[in-house]
Length: 235
Image (cartoon, rainbow, N blue to C red; front, side, top):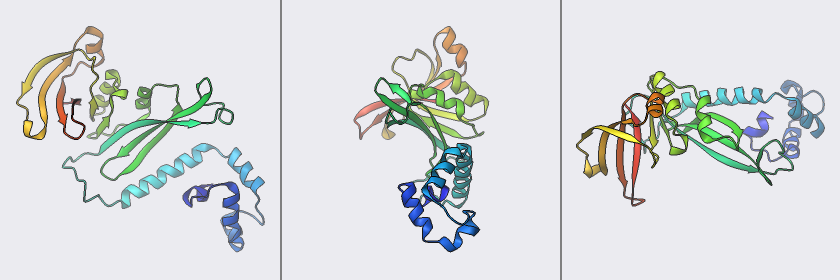
């Protein structure tokens, strides 16, 4: 199955045709004297999915060791920089009945942690699409000194406090309805598109309890999209 994935086989039939061309190597590959589509289908059904998960992470670890940094994109930040996002993958409800999403639709939510410096995904997690995106943060293992960038769909200050406790940092798009109290302001560098640079705290008893630390709020004008964007950053 792993060979089929890595070699881009489209089906079990395609995989069988590819393997059949090397019959003299079947014994050394552990296939036995003969192999059929039924054998492959049964092995695929009975195999624990965690075998493939562990193998994938081993391959990712090796790829990160051998990766050459992209010369067209470089960062002066010493720590690792990760981008975290999710996407909904539609599926056929008749086949994937367990992936109930809507009345006549099945889907899963694919969460991916992407290493920005190496352009390699380092963590992938699949959950039911009906589960909110923010729950994907509960499955991440945060590294000290790392920067975690995410969209506002993952904004949850109680979970952001967990990132702080691991001595890591986060940068996220701000929600429009956030209640904040400004503590201080720095002079913005308007030449770089920065409209304001502030230190703020969350307003409200329960919000402050979930994240009692000071946040950095930056408002940036995106010349390409021709709109201002607001970000929160841990300090």
